[in-house]
Length: 514
Image (cartoon, rainbow, N blue to C red; front, side, top):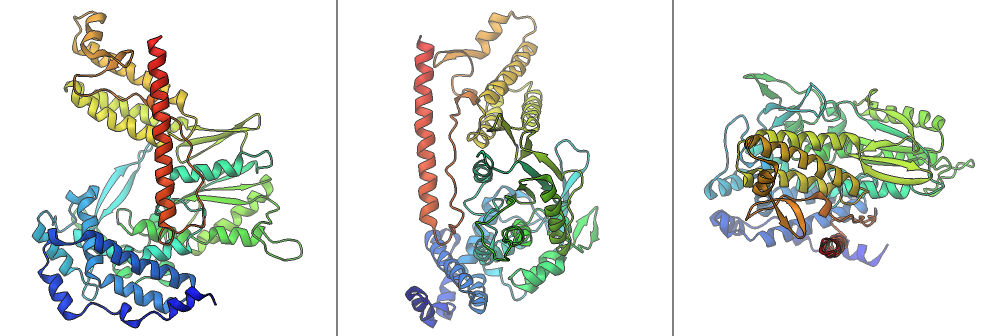
């Protein structure tokens, strides 16, 4: 046993004790604006680090005790409430209509957040549109109290989820994103010896169909509170409906539940396909080049031939069946890398042995439609307001695709937007000539003669977004134990992007000067 493990086991028992009665009385007198948020984050993070170490040491009794410490902590409760009132849904009430708008409401919510007497209220059912489909996606909106309790339980569950998760799972995890999944896929598929066959997997109604029994048995969380989340039901058209399965979309903790349900697929595939003919298992031995990459409920599995993927598909189906899930027959397909496939809004395809990753056709159609709808909606608004709304869309889309081969796509979308704006401007002034319209809405800037702008704001051009690759993620790093690694990685990427932007700006200015 290592020295640090001995030291950890001999920790003072006092460090695991709850605050004294005097301390709790002090917390009771605290006002919302008097809370030391930095101290709160440090306190909760220390407990989370201890949970990670306990999980790694397979000390589950200690894990349970530390989880209880977090859920009973004043600081953790305050952080849970803070998360609820700062996210996008802070002004969206549940079935009770309550919104925490004042400091008094917020601090009262912290004091009322107790696990001993907690009972979840039914969800408010609403629907959002699915792109390209008539059917809508159901969302369950919890009350503010239920959201805060989910946030509190998530603080205790997240360290376990991050430690036991599949290494190649990238969705809804700390310090991981779709760009990391893309970079992992690039490393996996770009070599000459890379696998050529791809299984595109999609789970049918993943969030709605997960087995409650499986989650309650296998997810290490407070079972009573968890049962309240899962069995609370939902209200639609003033009628109460029970929930018999699934983790309702719309809750803070639902993505973590779904991730933990799907974790284990990577280990299953490795154990099956990384075993030699002599029966010895080794992770580096992978005769059929079977690899997994998962983002939430979407996943990709590679192999060296189509026949192996048929067997892989059967293994995955058995894995899903145990959890009450099924693969979607319409979205699950086997393709060759030379034909290309779409994943996370990008198209992966090899051209003469070279892998190119570009924004998918579906993604380009989606952004074009969104821009068109925005221009049409603000057809009678001021130019400044239209530019603000368009910049929100174009900057976000360019930020997402800034690490792939997207320069030509950016130029295409810029051109499409220019055509929309020209029609928008001509419609407003049907009696004016083209030159007058151009001088009214387009002005020179940085050498460009056609810059859609006013005196205060300018339309963002996607072509100005530099293409910068994302550094490969070390899959063994834990966000709770290796926070310095992730901070350094983020700073390095931001610096690379800043330098690339400065270089492209200088080159563009030089070009227009000529």
